[in-house]
Length: 116
Length: 116
Image 1 (cartoon, chains in turn yellow, green):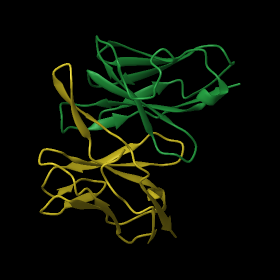
Image 2 (cartoon, helix red, strand yellow):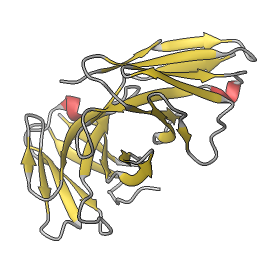
Image 3 (cartoon, one colour):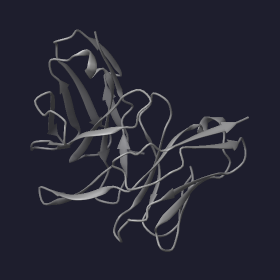
Image 4 (cartoon, helix red, strand yellow):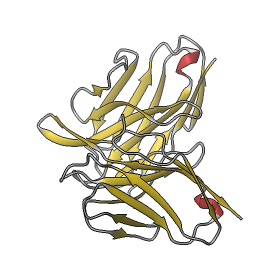
């Protein structure tokens, strides 16, 4: 089961910023926060990930609170093509063959609908 | 960026037969790949972790004899659904980690399996 909590759905007007929240209150110090999105009938698309500092790339910005218990994914200028289910994930660490792996367990995510 | 490719994109097979799905990391080596299954209107469910050169690690409730995983090289993992039944019809998705812990996990495009 997922270690994160997200709203079930959100709406956003095209051209406006979409701010998607995520709570991960049980996150530990060395665990990353990953964001993916899935457009219908496609594999998930990587968006961004971070540990403690805010991150930005060509797709989005990730704002992580100082206590790391929550984060917000920001799509600065949403388009219709950004309509998708957005997943906030904290990988589960474990030991396998002596290596530390991070498995991604998906929750239900947030269905973002961008309106024209 | 890194790319993960699956083949076939879709397949239809008869009940009782076996079907193989391939997952390739196209421009990086992946010692670990992951297999997921997704039913309509549901989230992705992790099935197993595929380790190059060793046995796969299956999630609780996933039958290892039903879903055979082979990770024979650093760029290829295969999932074989044996003795397929209509209830195995689903969207199967693989992913691979690029780099070590804290680096990016990329997903394939997914493979639709329909068992008739």
